[in-house]
Length: 219
Image (cartoon, rainbow, N blue to C red; front, side):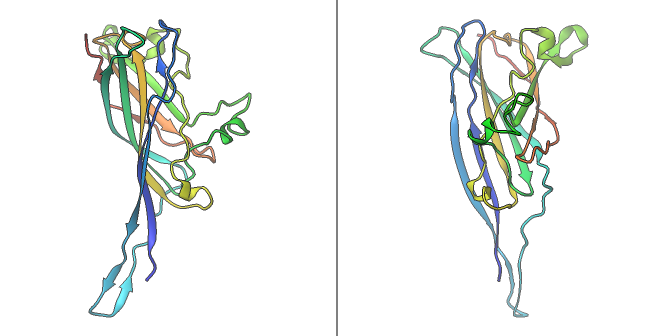
């Protein structure tokens, strides 16, 4: 009887701390990888003496993502009296050939890294609830024009080494951690949410998901 692997895992990838008013950034805020293999067991028909196996799942080669959850955790830094609010965004993903993630070498070479395209594969846009527009969520850049358009765009590494040399379906969850000094740019009491999409190494662009909203807590 033939057995197939359906690779899945959970990846948490860190991101820098933003703080325009304090002029410092922190790299590798959080980095944890905990990949596991999920084996698809075959079905055995004892009565008939026949075997029937579950096949490897068939996913499209363009990545598909879905929203899992969003949460906020507040930290204090020994280097600052200003608290740090860290937002964790978790999405689920599935991809037919498993070509998700860029390593540092790939990120510096075309077609990923070039004068026309920065090496990013995680597209994230922030939105703030606008009390002057009937509670509509507007781009954070509407409120703070100093925020660059790509402020939350980032890069995640290969999600599974087992798909580096051969194509195989891949699914799991990916969590990004974003840290902000309190009040820069989001103010206590503001309600925020995010829109996220990803690219694979073939530059196929996934669907876009929208998170639920959360309110920045007061001191």
